Image 1 (cartoon, helix red, strand yellow):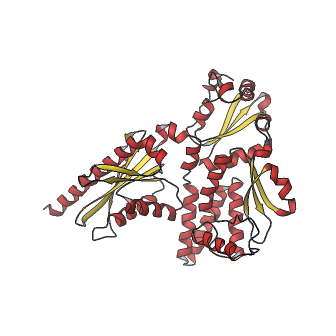
Image 2: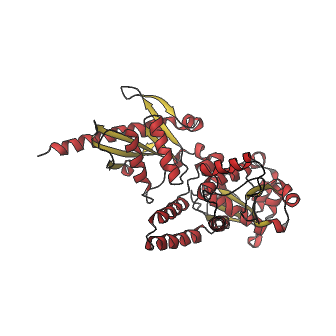
Image 3: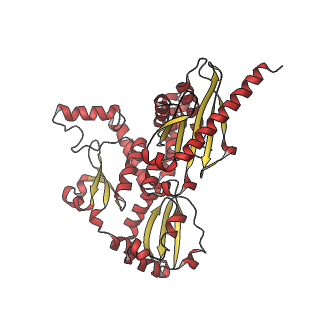
Length: 411
């Protein structure tokens, strides 16, 4: 294939899996991408042999066409890639790297199954077929896979202890399990039935059956609601939302896409305005590609507070914003304030199983920015856009608040 052949195919700027096909549509190579368009184009540069390898250059020359499958998130692309490589064993995937160095996901066949990451070279030595309940992989992108598991863990709490659960011999080992339950890494209920259900859902997710899983959870939520078990129904509802809105910025970051392509960054900024607690309002502003997206600005009347409480009001409007899945989710969230506002925003995101980095813009008494709180690399690369979003949120909040006060005294 060459650039002219590539121009005939329209690739979306979305996550997914791509397939280089040879004669008679034989699969030569399978890869995953944060942006299918950008990733596939990267194979058609002049010095591909130097940038990648001579083997990849040969694969591109041999290819007749490229096909692709879009996914809802980078995690799902990662999983689909692994499943397809395992099924088809494309020549250039297996030749490109020693399979023994790849990571595999193993779910053990135990009373409380453990979810373990195992190197290919250790798979045969440490496990037999009788020890394994489910096996997924290989996953070619090691670091990316580990980041993905951190996000998956927010959806499904599982055990990953070195020895089977219940066989701990020291008080320290048992205490570590209890501590991990408290911080949400391990299941909070020692229920075999409930845990097996979680493992089944985890299996469905890694089999690429997310949509079937969501359908099953929706039926369960409705059943719980009919039985008036509203708290349990709400837990299921939050899991459904999290599955449908997986925020995998960490994966995008590890592929270096998010920091190299400003157009992919959606920054949402929030601010509160009031006069000694009266007419309290909040706003959301949006900056995309370094430019304000004013049609996506949103206004909120703060309902839960009659007295001044900026952190509390900030938490309220962010929680209300999250209830709008029809609005595109941001890759960065900016709050006007300091540690208190940043903490409450992060708490709301955790409660909704969302992984989005939060930046706080600290101001002086004249409301001029003096410090940014957040991930250093994110701040270094997107400082201007973050400050623009924050400035817009402050301006928009002041205008909205003034209009509210005018309405109060309007005859």
